[in-house]
Each structure stands twice: as C-alpha cells, then as structure tokens.
View 1: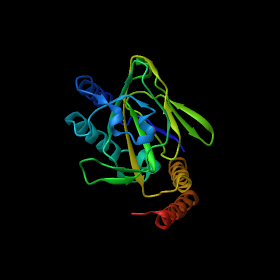
View 2 (view 1 turned 90 degrees about the vertical axis):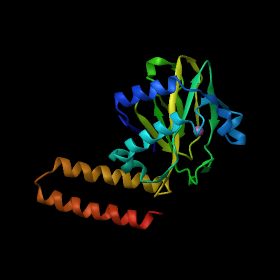
View 3 (view 1 turned 180 degrees about the vertical axis):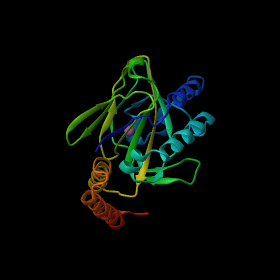
View 4 (view 1 turned 30 degrees about the vertical axis):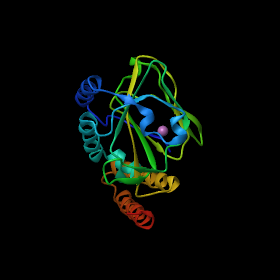
Length: 230
Ligand code: NI
C-alpha cells in the first residue's frame, strides 16, 4: 500500500526549511548507502549530524506526531531520524530496495525498516524528472508531490528516482518500524479505521450505526492487540 499524506508541514515550515536547506553544505550521498545501492545512488545529502538536519528532522517528527492520517496508516513504533537529499544536474537513484535494518551512526537507534517515507520540499514545477517510482502489485507508481506532502510506501518495494534534468529536487527521507510488521495486516487495519471514521461522520445520531461503530472499533483494537509488536 502506497499512501500520500498531504500537508504534513505548513507553507511557513516549508519556507523555513528551504531557507536552511538552500544555505547549508551538502555532501555526496554515497556515504550512507549500502554496498549494493552505492552503485545506483547519485545525489547529495546533508550530513546526518548537521545542525540543519537535526532541527528540520525534529520539526518533521513533531508534525508527524500530530498527524492522525500518518498514525492510522503507519502505526509507528520507532521512526529513524529524518535524512535529507538533493538531486540536480541529471542526478538519479537507480532501482534498489532499502536496507532491512538501519543503525544510526551516532545515536543508539536501530530499526527494522517496514515503511519508507519521502517528504517533498521543492514544488513539482521547480524541477523536471525526479519522480519517485515505486513498484507495487499494481505496477509502477510515479510520485511527485507538492512541498510539505509525504508519501509512505512499504520498504519491501523496489524503487528508483528518475534523473533530475532541470532545477533541484529537495526531499527528506526516512524509515520507520511499524507496530504491525506485515504490510497486508497493516493495510487491513487502515481500511477498517477509515471505515469506522466514515461511519462516525456520516451516521451521527443513528443508534444502529453508533452500535455498529462501537462493535467495529472493538474488532479494530482486538486485531491490533493480536498483531502488534512492541
Ligand atoms: Ni531507497
């Protein structure tokens, strides 16, 4: 399941981030790639311990902690500190799968990557190319979102970023370990959650609907109890 989460950051937050990202020093992205993906990877990154990466990473995590759609879709257990990348001048990232385990180089953080996330900082009109192409069971999904929006996709997916032939593509990317390891189970819970919310919205003051909502909420929590790993 691939899901776009709109407006994770406000326009002001995006503008502040752009100011920082446009005035900071970037390094070769191969530094954080695994052996296999270093061959496919051609982009720039912020050093993981740079003050800009830390400040903006905290801003993103704080925004996500208040985002109900993100929580419903990801059921996050642990989130890796966000990283930042920049593609320009024909740079791209060939087809790869993200490493299954991520160990932070300086912090005591190690996660299993269940979900990958990309948060866009540059508008689609600012650059050509730079599409995030994700292979899922429905074929290849091509993703290029407005600034402040985020895409969440299973880390098990093969994906690549097409060459940026004009302008610059600036994004944050990170991984998370979900309480629900299995993509199918997580997807079922998300569908059930959305259906319960819709029932609550559309059928207010209807006693039968209310009772059904309570019952389905019970099913949701009991499935979560069965499947969640903490
Ligand atoms: Ni990747």
